[in-house]
Image (cartoon, rainbow, N blue to C red; front, side):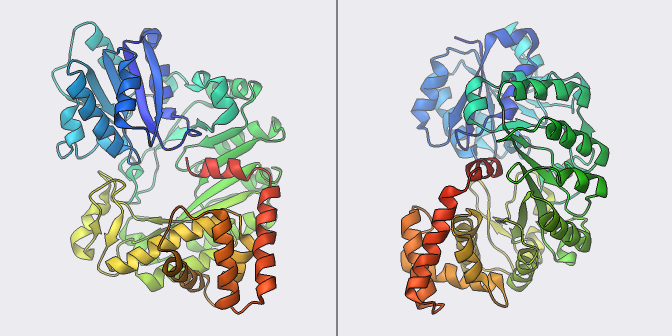
Length: 485
C-alpha cells in the first residue's frame, strides 16, 4: 500500500522512467509513503487501473509524454469513474502547455507545469495534511539543480541487469530550434559533477553498463563533457555502453582525443543535424555551421570507433522533397552508422506552430502530432516519406542488412534509390509493420535480382551474409535500446 503512487507508461520495458525517479528522490520524508509503478504501452486500461488501485493510493502522480498521452487520457478518465476521490496530479511536457484544450487536464485534479521535483513534493505534503492549494495548475519554477537529490540510488538490481540507465549532467538548451520544447528555456543549468560522480560510481559498482544521457547539448561546455567522458573511460570495462546527444558543429580537439580512446561498441554519439538547408534552419531559429558539422562527423567516423547516429527531420517549413533529398544524400556521404529520419511533430507549446498558416502545415490531431502535409509536401508524398523512414529503419539502421542497403543506395542519390525500393516494397506488401526478418530477406533478394538486375544467387548470398553478420555482432541490442529511449 502507498499514499502516493508515481506512475507512467513507458514506451518499452527496457526504458526506465527517469522522471519518476527524480520525483521520488525529492519527496523527502514522504518517500516512505510513496511507490513507483512503471506501466508499459500496450497494457489494457482496466489492467493499468487495477495495478494502481491495488496500492490504494490517496494521490496519483502521472507522468505524461507525447508517446503515452492517449493511454494516460484513457487511464485518468477510467480512474475518475472508479475512484472519484483519488487525487490525480499530472506532470510532464505533454501537459505543461495548452492545458485548457486537453480533456486529460480537465479530468485531473492538478497539473504541474515544468520541472516538478520541488512542486510535487510540496503539493503532496499539503494534500496529505489537508491543505489543498487554491489553484489547479501549478507553474513550477526551475529548481536549483545543486539542491536536488540525485535519483540514481533508486535504480533497482533488475533495472541494472536488464534496462537502460538514464542520466543527466545538465538541463536546458541555449538554442532556439522551434520544433523543440527545449527552445522555450534558453538557459543551461548544470548539476554539480562532485555529486554526480559518486552516484555513478555506485551504479558502476553494482554492475550498471548501459547509460543514456538525456542532456540536449552534452558537448556544449568542453571541460564538463571531457570530465564526464574521462570519468567513464577511467572505469571502462567490457560491455560498457554510453549514449550522448552532441552539438555536431562544435567538437574541439580535447574531446576528439578522449573519444579516440573508447573501444568500438562502447560509445554512441547522436548528432542532431535535422536539416542542411540554411534558409530553412534560419526560418526555425536553428543555428548550425553545416561545414563544421560535416567536418566533425567525417572525422569522428574516420578517426574514432564511436557509433554515429545522425538525425534529419522531414517536413520543416520551407523544405520540399528535393531539398530533403539533397540533405539526406549529403549526410549519407559522411557515413554515419545510422540516419534517423523523423517526421516533424507539432509538440504542444513548441513555437513551430507559428508557421502553420504561411506554410499550410497540417498535423495529425492525435499524438504524436506528426505532419500530414504542407504547402510543399502533399499528403501522398508525406505517406511515401513516412514509409521511407520506416523501411530505412528496418533495412539500414537495424544493421541487419548493411551491405544490401549499401548496394540499393549506390549511385547518384542514396535517397532516390532507397525511395524507389521503398515504393516497390510497399507495392509488394502493403505493410510497414509486422514484416518478419526472414520475409524481409526474401523481398530484398527479389528486389536485387528483379529490379537491380543482380544475379539471383549473388543477391540471395548477399542478404544471407548480411543476416549472418548481424547475428554475430555483439552489442547491437544495447545500441538499439539506447537509441529509442
